[in-house]
Length: 588
Image (cartoon, rainbow, N blue to C red; front, side, top):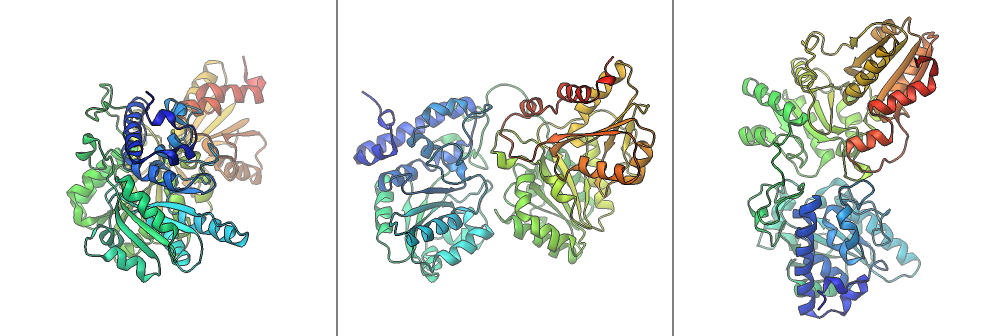
């Protein structure tokens, strides 16, 4: 006899199941996810919490006629299963495989790119208003995590949507977590048992339905049917548990939001390899040491404690550490207030989420020249998350901002010295970029003293070829230098550690007699470091040949860093091929 999951060929099939079959389907989905994600890795805790909720949605609404907008898409694995993508799950976390999130590139059932928070209500309202104009009476459903609900754009959208007469249905998936535990007044209202959530939404004019047990399909379907009949915009408040039905999530600080391959019984990571230190781990070592001796230092991160290496610091200094939730804009402007009052705020982001606070960097931090240290992790390629998560636009957008200093270390020791220097001299906005993956240590410490840490490092002699690189491309560039030198090309390698302001005088001196200059960066070429250096050389009468190595201005597919380096010829081999193809006279 086929399991209920095996009978689902189309999402409309869910609507033909009775209550017992729907419950059996949920059990099947839970088993499927644990079996498959334990092999591939993925967002396991986030998805175990939305199985019944998603089944109820498909039981009440027919996708894609009714658009399902998940905010964010890391809770969408059950939706993928019910829309015909079970066969793709073995490809998760493999190149050209199934997305970790929901993406419009994968299925007609995924209307939006759902990999950042704060978008579903805005998009949903826009769709609902457009449908109203053309006479389409089908609903639009926005599923919003309780922490995504307080993103700035979400609150702006809720303020508008509540007073429009549309068929928009908002489901609040309330599990008490973003990635880190939830925080703030809205979080507390949702968690309360005395009607605060009802009062909050009804005060805005919404029809509040709940709280509903998000793991009870019958309750959820009844609530959604009620939402269809609501006179004002319905908000269905579904209470869920992240990692529901899986004991290992109960003892994890983030309820196993995401995991690499794991044992489905214990939740323990597969394999015996010791976890590797990352750049945020190295940064945290310095911050903890500095905080011991400087009470002015504070730490802030918008709901990414786990990815920014700050868990230990938050535990040790809870009064000086702040996680305001998934509120990237507010978090950065809050640091401005701290700095203006004499604190030394250090705020940590993942590069992809720092983009959400671009206006705050310009207007609030840099326009006022406020002394703030920003740590930006996952610069460059950032693995199997969506194309939206690569930190390949940083150099281009950051170098246009006045008053901002930007550092990029080639390894862990450089990072630690840079943080020390930044905190010693925190008189203006300073940002330190950090690549994704295990921390490097090249053992080159001669110029890592504080006095020289921001000056370009020069390795080798000769003017046949000058390679200029930064941060995470140092290893590949050194491979090119070794290859060229071995073949008789006198090659120098320059590691730029402060990329804004660019050390133009030093670079002009280094390249004065160079025959050829090549700039290497793991970032988009449009507006990147190579563009700036090329312009500088041209304006100063450089007579040699010049080329740039980087990425096209496009959204780069997800993949392991080494895979993407190979595909885009940013590893040593690819760089050598490009350089020798452009300048064949360099070949022996």
